[in-house]
Amino acid sequence: MSKRTTGPEIERLIQLLAKLPGLGPRSARRAALHLIKNRERLLEPLSAAIAEARDKVTVCSECGNVDTVDPCTLCTDPRRDRSILCVVEEVGDLWALERAGAWNGLYHVLGGTLSAIEGVRPEDLAISGLLERAGTGSVKEVVLALNATVEGQTTAHYITERLKGLGVSASRLAHGVPVGGELDYLDEGTLTQAMRARRPL
Amino acid sequence: MSKRTTGPEIERLIQLLAKLPGLGPRSARRAALHLIKNRERLLEPLSAAIAEARDKVTVCSECGNVDTVDPCTLCTDPRRDRSILCVVEEVGDLWALERAGAWNGLYHVLGGTLSAIEGVRPEDLAISGLLERAGTGSVKEVVLALNATVEGQTTAHYITERLKGLGVSASRLAHGVPVGGELDYLDEGTLTQAMRARRPL
Image 1: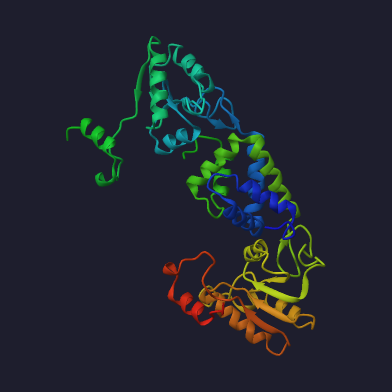
Image 2: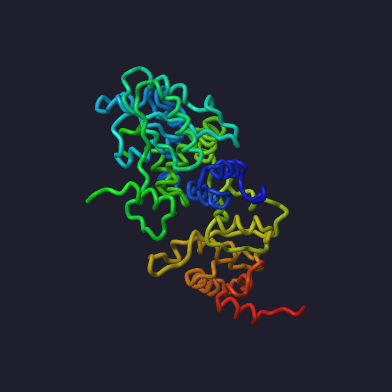
């Protein structure tokens, strides 16, 4: 769009919206127009919500979750089991497990995975904090809920080695057929793992 | 996501982002996390840009474009031909024509199309304003750049009828093969129109 079409303020808004994951230059323009056309229903509430997020949101110094309080709501929830820790790569993974209601212990967000290619070393991730939390004596089990990718599994292996001697047991998520998944569309690795871990009915 | 996972401020941000075209609930969560993780590079600038859009953006009372001044930058540009008017459905269409550099006259945004099913009548669109502008004597030609849909063409037909007697000529965009388009993938209607309107080489 040429600079003459509309004001530089709208151009700037479009450019920033285009940086959001899932929005490209074209959909960012549509989103900006949608915002402008829905001033009261969307533009003003979103302006307030983003300003509030900017002012209030922080990263939990215990687990790495994002929240408006530190320690976060999960870390201070008395109903959660403080003796079990679930290690995830990113906050989005934590949210996914919470949506599923799959975990009632505490979390630890690594902030990524080890990667020789991208130069991510153990000290670039929240691994020393994890070892500290796991070594206090109050933690019994650490579940490594990392992605089933090469990087995720390399990181899980590294952490498992580092946890040895701390008196905690390490585990990983089960592999298998996704619920609702069709065998015909599954890769051979998953099928092999699902067969090996078959359960009696 | 359960309410316990994160603060209500982040939930609210996710809900509002999910209302943007192109973002669903899942991508809105990713976008919110991306914003929070890139505070200085993205969250703060976007907060400022949205607040500025909220405070400054207005709709041009002449043509319906959105801008920070009224009349808009296009309507007051002395280099543009004020004797030709291009009628579009939405502001996004105006932006598309400007990006293409396809038009050097003025615009008129209808704000939609006539639709019996959705109950959109002529008085719901900016048609009376268009007839007023077209009837001042300074306009020679009105190009109806409406979508090639049933609604767009019905609206174009209605406007053409209303323009009769005002001493302006009406035209529409040419139909044909899109530049870069493959014949094999085009519908029969487009191919027929492209063949009928064939040009000598």
